[in-house]
Amino acid sequence: MEVILLEKIGRLGDLGSVVKVRGGFGRNFLIPKGKALPATRENMARFEARRAAFEARQAEILEQANLLAEQVKTVSVVIDRPAGSTDKLFGSVTNADIAAFLHGKGIEVPRSAIDVPHPIRTLGEHLVRIRLHPDVVPEIKVVVERQVNN
Image (spheres, rainbow, N blue to C red):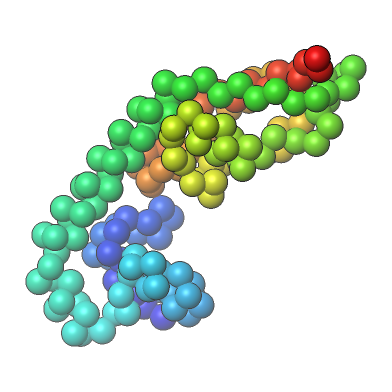
């Protein structure tokens, strides 16, 4: 299936690119989410007529991602978890835990945007990427500390 991308999508293409994708990915994700249109002559003409509006929307999305990245960089993520005597956690810290911490600080980051490269199962500092936009991927430090029982 060929589609016209209405925004920049990492590892796929830029705004206005005509790319070939699997049918299910196009029909079930890209088109319903408003990220692409089927590549027909009518849609190509419609896209070219509204290209400036799509480019303005893409610039606005990039600006919002940059603002959110600045907010994320100012917050230090410190998560308390119970751990054993060898500094191994009883469980792990997931992207949902990091998203909940950021939500508590008033920063809304989707859980799916947080990229934990490997499971966090030990105390200490860990680097985590947050994919806000294909061009905006800040790295933050997640500090996991031993939970103190009162």
